[in-house]
Image 1 (cartoon, rainbow over the protein chains, first blue to last red):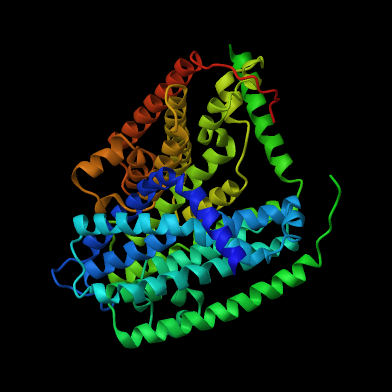
Image 2: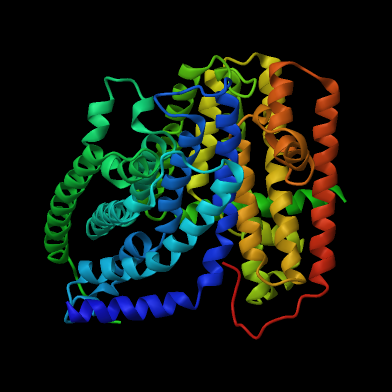
Amino acid sequence: MRKYRVIYKSVLMENLQYAANVAMGFFSYFVFIYIFVKLWEYMYRMPGERIAGYTKEQMIWYVMMTEMIWFGSNVASVANEVAGDIRSGDIAYRINKPYHYTLYILTKYTGEWSIRLPMYAVFAAVIGMVMVGPLPKFGLREVPVMALCVILGLTINAVFKLCISLFSFWIEDTTPFQWLYDKVILVVGTIFPIEIFPEILQPLFKLTPIYTVCYGPAKLIVDFSPEKCVEILAAQLLYLVGGCGVMLLVYRKGVKKLYVNGG
Amino acid sequence: MSTAVKNQLRVCLLSVKYNIMREMVNKVTFLTNISFMILNNASILVQWFILFRLREDVGGYTFREIMMLWGLTAASYGLSHILFARAFSLPELVIKGKLDAYLVQPKNVLISVITSSIRISAIGDLLYGIILMAFCRLGLREWILAALFLVTGTVVFTAFSLLLGSLSFWFLRMDILENQTVMGMVSFATYPDGIFQGLSRFLLYFIIPVGMAVWHPVHVLARFDAGMLLTVLGYTALLAGSSVAVFYRGLKRYASGNLMGART
């Protein structure tokens, strides 16, 4: 574990130098949130109206939280870097190091979001308070468990994206698969809560990563309940264990296909 | 004069042709990029199915008008990235001193620069836009107008990006501003203008020209309005002229680098 702690610390220190660059991404986040504030202001026509059980404030905060998770964890290491390493052959230099390549990438990813996510969280809280107002029933006591849920969600997402990138061992470019995965998560889990979809589809969505990656953490933030919290955490742990198993299997099969050429 | 224009146009088309041929070296990647971009764009339709389950209109748009909006945005964005992709990454060439290779060529510098690369997934955007427009069941007149607006939309996207990118001749970090503003423009362009009011609406029509690239065209396609059509044409010509002028003004400030390179 010590070696991964050292990797984490070095990535964290490196990323601290580029905190200003992260702040430049706030513009895109703001544009996205601004559009959704206006959209939901249009869709909610009566004061106090509820759509799929959500008030206007909850619906906007839901989008702000899912987007905060999305923007706050949007780093290249689990997608482009892994695919790039495999395509260019650089992975040959990484797999003979005294660490497991996939765990190295996950540690690096954690170091990267450790700077981005808190910055986006503060920015989201500020624009949320200004544009929508405080969240009703939000309790500071539940913040640690909400944070745990967000971290688990981020890690599960990284594991799945890493699995897709590892398919570069077989196909040259996995970027289109990353687009599709991202878009499904974005449309089904980020823009809307699951309750807004037809009832027949809701149990299906609860079995997908969408439930654990973005819906679960955001739901707990906007409408916390202890029962829901236990359900979401249990689902996240299951997904994390299953996802890591798949990731290690794909990696083990993939490296066997690796050819090293001189150069 | 006409021979010079014809020659320039020929070089342009050859440039696009070779860009595509270069990308087609790996056919599987080429086809996957295009087909997955179509799927990627199509998945967002789910969002609109959900919103139209809640209300009969969104921002005053019917579902058909939303499809036109998406069709026009995707097709214009796609065509601009097929023909003029480099206009969207101009700051990189300026900052790193990579323009030298274009300055020594006996053809128009701006056209040589902006046609020198392609984004293959943009073919998927263009095809998706056309497919979506086909679902709108347009008449002959609407198809002619849609083709015209595809050209104006492409020019507006390219010219706006070129204008912002050309500012890198004067200022640093314009790559980030250009990228975020253009992506912001695309985000706004995929939602109806009826949800924006007041100052934001004014800004989105005249400063970040989303209104001229797609909103006005969709209004004209839905209900023909000669005034709006002329406004779009006039604004497009003005923006294109301004961006070209700013590029050449900035080019005079360009300090050549010592980088050895050739046009790719």
